[in-house]
Length: 320
Image 1 (cartoon, rainbow, N blue to C red):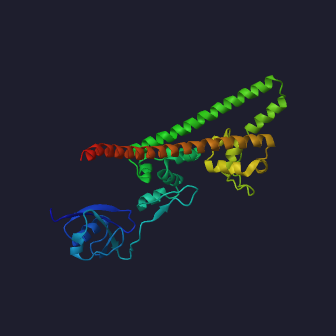
Image 2 (cartoon, helix red, strand yellow):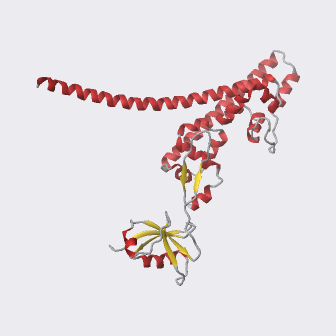
């Protein structure tokens, strides 16, 4: 057993991978072909899985580290590197990560993967995400999210609980605002507001935006953002920070044309969006400030310890 070498083998697609313990390169070919379903008569080529180096020399094989992963190429099979999944270029820097093909096939097209990479770069970005983004991360199975983040499953589970708390808090804020709006409407009605005005407001609140709405060419908003703005109560709590920035930047006149609202209602929406944007950015600044203070405190502590050591040395030097 002392001469046997633990290693791994896979096929060219990396969809099949097995662990083996073999004494020689020839035994690796025989056992590897058996596990991968190759016929014994068919010749195979052994290469290193990570860079495609062909392994033919027995001495070289024995010098490789334990648990080296080999790829067995059958006939016209060719080695290719792992595919790279990249978060793209967004307003915040995002890491890219290497994944095995079975993980890549499961993750490609999944909207949560890019969000996970954003979280891996900076956990404070939770504050800036939309409710839809937060919900997608909460719904991801914990083991898959842990793999994408490179976190232990326990830490990932705590992170998902925190994301759910953020969602719950936003929902509570929205319900509080809705109750306040209902109260104000009741007060207006008691003060003699006309039934026609009250009816118009109720119609405006209950308007549903069709799912197939196209992107507005003048504003550049995607249909989902317009649906939230037109059809949801307290839309500012549901949008991402990027969407809020876009709404505020467009201004009242442009948003009037996009939404088809009067100036008063549009101005109120922009004020609420600007207030929510300011609140989120203040939270991010607070987190960054806390990190800076922590680092500065560690630096000051090191400096104080150094000064203390110097002071304790001075008396002995004076005595000399």
